[in-house]
Length: 251
Image (spheres, rainbow, N blue to C red):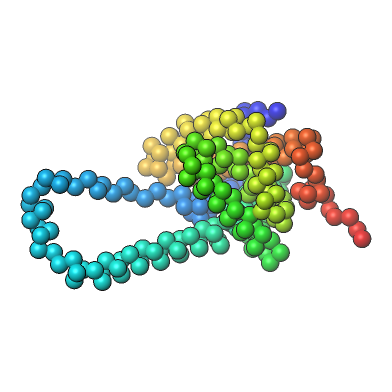
C-alpha cells in the first residue's frame, strides 16, 4: 500500500535534477488543458430600475437581430475551435506530459516524451481513448456533482496507461484505470488536499506561484501511478505485456 509521504519524497528527489524541464512540461500541460480561469460576469440587473427600462423601450430588436445572430455565430465557432484544440492537441499533449513525468520517475528525463502521442500508430488511439474518458466524465457530472468527482478519480490513470500502451483500447484503458483506483479514490483525494497549502502560497504571489507548484503535483501523480501499476500487476489486473513493460516476443 502506497504512502503519501513516500510518493512526495520520491517526487522531490526526481525534481532535484529535472525541475525546470518539469516546469516547462507543466506549463504546456496547464495551457492545453484549459487551466486558465475566466472572470465571472454579473448578470444581476435590477428589474425595478425605471431608467434602464426607459432606455430599452426605444431599441429596435429587429434591426439588431442580424448583429445578434453574427455574435452567436462567432461564439459557436469559438467554442468549436476550443473543443477541437482540446481534443486534437490537448489530449495528445496531456498523455505526452504524463509520459514525461512517468519516465522521469523511472530515471529517464527526456523532453522528447512530450511529443510521444504524435505518431501515426498512436495518435488516433490516444485521442479516441481520451475523448471516451472525457465523455464518460461528462455524463457522470450531468448526473450529479459528487458522482462526477468520484468517477474523475476512477478514470484519472487513463493518460498514464496510454503513456504505457497507447493501443490498449479506449474501453480497456478506462476499465483498467477504474480497477487500479478501486479502494484508493479517497486516499487520492486526500493526496490532492495535501497540496492545498502549496497552492495557497502560490496564489499569494499573484497566482503565478501556482505554476511553480505544478511540477511537484505532476511528479507526485506519476509516482502514484507507478505504485498503483505495481499493485495492479501483483493482483493480476493487468500484465507486463499489456502495459508493454517487456519487449514483444520475437517471431
